[in-house]
Image (cartoon, rainbow, N blue to C red):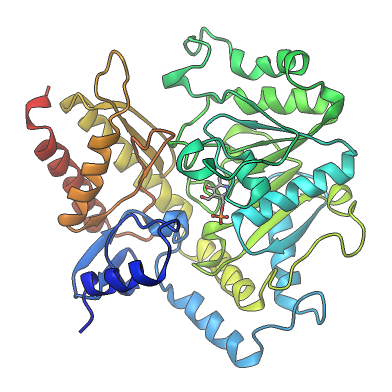
Length: 437
Ligand SMILES: Cc1ncc(COP(=O)(O)O)c(C=O)c1O
């Protein structure tokens, strides 16, 4: 029998170190919110393949749709011979994404690829080069997406030169406000700062798009105040700038709405999606105002594998399941539970500096000292490892990797959720027994 250690040795011999691994285990099978490794050990999954498994591992309806599709055809390339699942999915996404206007959708394979296409479309439609992105943003690892990403190590370090014409402003990270202000007395200065940004970084007439995550994902589950995006969007509108919402991590129910911008009452010109949209199959989408999406010339957009029919069928099944089992309500319930538990942890352990969340996107920021807010990076790593030893798979986030970011499948049972949360608490207590308040 292959063991985790023997497979790890082979992995290290044949695969470079760059593609990172959080946990030194290999999966044998996965169902719902449980992953079983090759040695037969079961884990509760609080990582969801980095936010891809909102529907749960191996959902029965997704399996049925995929099995039906692979009997028919697997790939023709949409650009050579078209197929209905692509059209059907585009139609559904045009309907459910925020924005009361006519939309069109194109499909690609990954979050990064969707981000890049959104920028291409915005540049083509405006004839402008500039893109405004944010500090602590994550938009992917391909060169343009990487250039939009903020974190230097490990993502950007050594890979320069980056794509030009990208300008970065602070995000609404209230716990660590870049302007040293406090909400609400700040009056959302960080959003109005965009007007000043046009004087100091790039003039508005040169900006094609502003791309923003409605809640920071990799950046640490940072939830902006409710007025934030309305202000940004208004300033974009005043200046003919396309507002792109990167819903790759927030989308498909994570925040207890299908898309996180719905919480904020803004209608993005373009919405970018990936991760949980196809139950684990690689698929991403760019949905936007029809006139923008139609701007690039025939052949200007696409890709050989883009919008694979098996992935499209999986995605259609995911959308059906969202309706059938009301995953948005489940996300809300999960979010309430996690938020209240994390707040309890904050009362009991000094290492928990901040707790914040939107729906089931709830983060816990760990600090060495509540006054200085020094990030507890080592502690967070120890916590992730200790949780694994106790049967819970987690990942961290944040520019300093000091934020616990649960991305459990939304089909997780109450018992599994309780058990996972109690493993987190026990692990915090064990690593910092003297720190208890
Ligand atoms: C908000 C956001 N955008 C883009 C990406 C890139 O997606 P992918 O890894 O599928 O390229 C990610 C991935 O974590 C993400 O969280």
